[in-house]
Image (cartoon, rainbow, N blue to C red; front, side, top):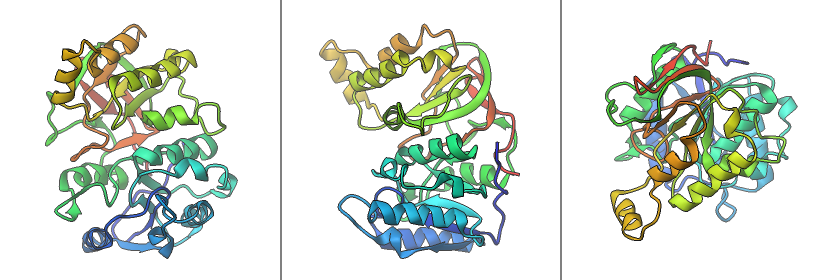
Length: 316
């Protein structure tokens, strides 16, 4: 694993928008000020405020800005301002061989495509965690989400339970018990499926596959999981961790009334016979507050303890 240097006070954070643009410039400025108050320098190019329909500028502009962030010797970490849509459009435009210096990189949702490509082509870990626009509370960075993320980015947290207070330790539930060991890999389920058949799809063999999504009904989640099963991906993993899929009690009640499968029933039916530990309701994904998941880190998935035990830091 090509580990980046740990983030430290005084370092420079560069913001990028590989997908959609920030939808509230004043809120973004508040988030930037909060990081500067903590002692970090924040920089960005005007590209992040460009707009081309639902994209933060043209594909070429966003690809160059992404490359420039990694090439910039004065940049120590790269944070995404938001997800949205558009990162997969950049994959063939980015010169992956030019990315030689590993740097802390964090985003989630649509950013999954870039995290997968960085691992596949650069052996570079990343972090599936908060972004500046989606993880604000009253126009300030969500303290719980960032409070979990920063010790991982700075290397302060190198081992131990990934799920810890103030998160609800009783919320995760085991679908299949047991314990397994592997690298945490994954991200947004629909984005992962969109990479299948491309040269950016990682080898998930022996990984602890973490998955989340939003705005998808149980039958669509069933379709994605079945696609991964038919491709032989799920039969090769060492374990599965399911985040928050934003499935409400009202949706669950409505599905039951119509005689349809609930989200939980889909998970149990599709994943329950794989012969590997499966943990669901882990607090990451399109929620606030959220855990940060270190993509590429070695962990133990312990479904009896209903937790993920970090075995190494993703920074050095």
